[in-house]
Length: 104
Image (cartoon, rainbow, N blue to C red):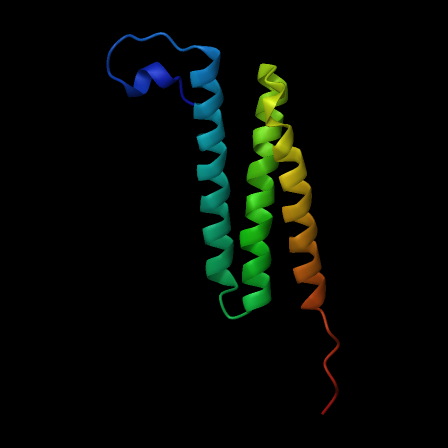
């Protein structure tokens, strides 16, 4: 991720909190971009689209948890719980779209 002070155009110090939030929002932008590209290819399948959106939320939460561990910020424990809920929901939606089609 970018050094936060380079976005300001003037010299500035970057503390742990600034670095944490820059990394968190960087993860969000990457996951949203990947999700939108994937969703544009599967727009006709609503459950798949929903799974992509919910799965993206789970990946964002996993990213938050990984950043927190890397920076030694244990206050983002909820991100791990949210990630588990999002990813389990996405998995359920994807499995529900795989119904066998009756032969005609």
